[in-house]
Amino acid sequence: MEKQFSMRQNASRTWIDPAIAKREDPDFTVQGEYVGKGLGLQLVALGGGKFDGYLFEGGLPGAGWEPGRPRTPLKEEEALTLRKKLKRVERRSPTLGKKPPRGATILFDGKSTDAWERGKVESGHLQATDAITKQTFASYTLHLEFRTPYMPAARGQGRGNSGVYHSGRWETQVLDSFGLEGQDNECGGIYSISKPRLNMCLPPLAWQTYDVEFTAATFDASGKRTAWPRITVRLNGVLVHESLELTKDFTTSAPLTGPLTRPEGPVFLQNHGNPVVYRNIWIVPR
Picture 1 (tube, rainbow, N blue to C red):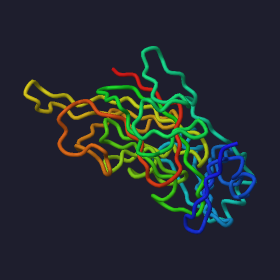
Picture 2: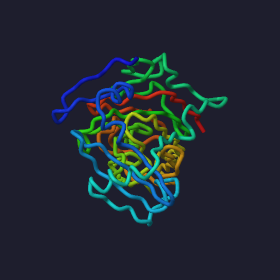
Picture 3: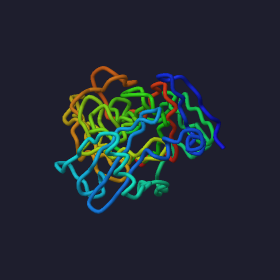
Picture 4: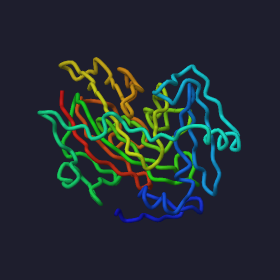
């Protein structure tokens, strides 16, 4: 059993172990996703028996519901009544546990942090401690798995916040933004650059995946940049950004700042004060 992490956050505890959360907070087993014929429901726990509810016409995001279809906020009583008529589901990313292909560089296998500066491992998970890879990469394919804590009374950027920075400059946001609209500062967003095509964030304490194709910036012989980098991102197996041009030198809180002068950079896992954890991280240089 994992060591329990306890903290004060809006006068509420934080849970990092689903078994303990299930035992200690009944709201944990109510929050989540529900489906019925042509309908999807997401219930977001807010602490103290309070919930937000969102009804999706066609099914859940990425499983019947697509951008442009109705997404309707429900009153709490409506949402809790509707859930009794629907089936609760626990979705898993289709790339969860994906094995590294031949030629991959293993960044974290559950044991060694040799690939990282400031890497810290606990219970087989890499902690969000501003860990940064010792090696730098130009273009690559990256797979990683992350888990946000259950912080029902926390709100906004204080709820399971971390981030994966590509080339040390551009952040794919990690946040417990389950049930929200999907903005650039929420899970799946490229912070301060682009919101995701749809919000594919799963409930807190579910393992989730990022699968990223990063194409580095190019430079001519004189060192002048001839093309910005581009990024394609799948969150939990669903495309949320496709060949997005990153037309900024860096995003907020990036470890590398200043003008972009080279194609290579590290992978960085942001510490934002929340117990977010990572596992199964590997990269294939292209």
